[in-house]
Image (tube, rainbow, N blue to C red; front, side, top):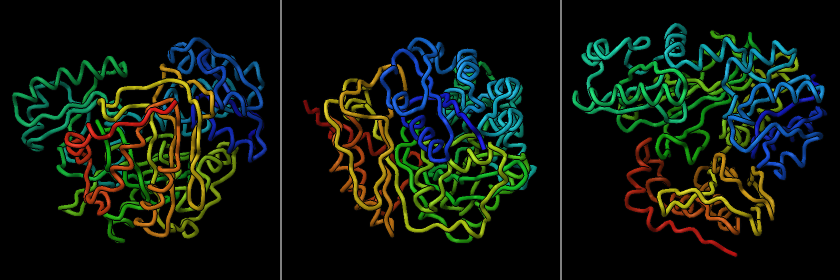
Length: 458
């Protein structure tokens, strides 16, 4: 088992990982920027080290500073959380070269599955259906025009090394395509240092379904699926498990395909394999793999009772996969919403500030994942995520009712947050019937956002 873990992240995920490690008897080291000196993850870790100024590139993305902190504190392992360096293959390799255990897959696995084109090829080789499109990176716009004859319109142009919805353009006709192709390449190069592109057919009214997997490099299991179709600008805002859109047959096929792919690439740790599901054809298509713990992992933990972060730590410490597929049973329904420091009535403008008072919801089936405390000042330099509110009920209807109750209990005073968005969504007939798709929320916001004015309490 690991002895001392350095958590190379901040916010609620750093708090989550530190707690899981401490539960296993592993000593913890927090790293922090100057802006996060008073952050909760710094307070609860066994040790804390400053790694630089507020700007992420000078602190949380500063590999040399993180590796030095590991050496100075005698850490034997590094957990990257999500975001920042979590899917950086070079960082994983650098940790290994420094004699540290990187809690996650190998650098080679990250490279294979982090490159969207290589991941498509690996999925195809494992017999996992992929969205129709280019077989590899598109060499240029001339080759792209030939691919259009197979995909037709609308078509999506995507960054090969992308993520977070960046480097993506959708074209509905040839004129849009000719303009969008160089734009996507430029954005991909600026965001990821890699201007490579590939193409996929757009599946209209698609649902976003993903499968949680755990692997030890040899064996792998799935922990069932999550649905993440409620998205804004390709960013998830509401996640739930299981998906009520799938039949038992499709669910089994989907989850087994994820296990095949995880085994095929020798995946180690917790990961997520993402798909688009087409209601009309009742078919699913692989789109990408996230080689890290996901923001929405708690909904899977709520329905399975499995601590995914702890299992990842055990695997990284050299233990073989403890779980057998027949032991992983899904019970009830769970929903997670992301409470951000944003004003949904003003196009989600960021709203950093000081938490003057905090009331955390409680009761059966309620989980509040956060780094907040009264008096904490939310810095303006990072992701606006404040907390994840996760609820569990016997049915989806019961989970939604519990979500509403928990949202009404929640008070994060001194800030404006996205709480009004989720209260409104929970009361919407289409959401209650799960009659949504990945573009549904943006259309809904066009007519509802002005009414989502958050309260700002002193």
